[in-house]
Image (cartoon, rainbow, N blue to C red; front, side, top):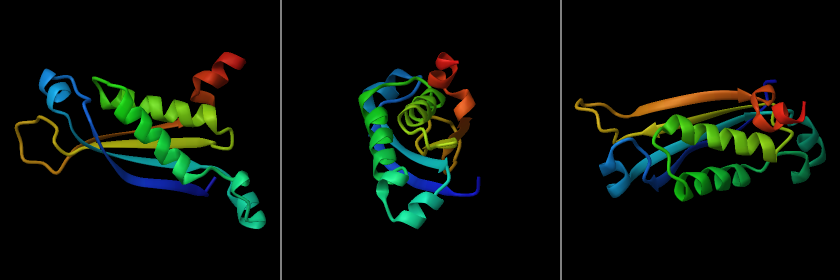
Amino acid sequence: MADRILVHRLAVFARHGVLPEEERLGQRFYISVECRLDLAPAGRSDDVTATVSYADLAEIALDIATNRRFALIEALAEAIAETCLVRFPRIETIAVRIDKPSAPIPAVLDYAAIEIVRGRSDSVATTETR
């Protein structure tokens, strides 16, 4: 599927990380979400119910990132991906990227990041219903 909905670099302040200082002080993260799904029905009908709202995707990412705490940004990405796959059956695959510009690494770098890609067959909800 070539159609995509993108939410790019949603900035959040949160307390994720392995180190106690990361939990205590917090830091900025950037979250990007890319969903692949068929957008033709929405394009033809001009009906928001025929798609997935990027506002809803951003709200899910913001809610999970700011109201839960994860030691690993991999776990944060998994929680966002799983929630989106469960909530929006139209999504075929989802990529979630977490950028951590203030990663506590003793080097000069722009950021550290992870990106995961999950599909409907990877979803816990789908696996449980089989």
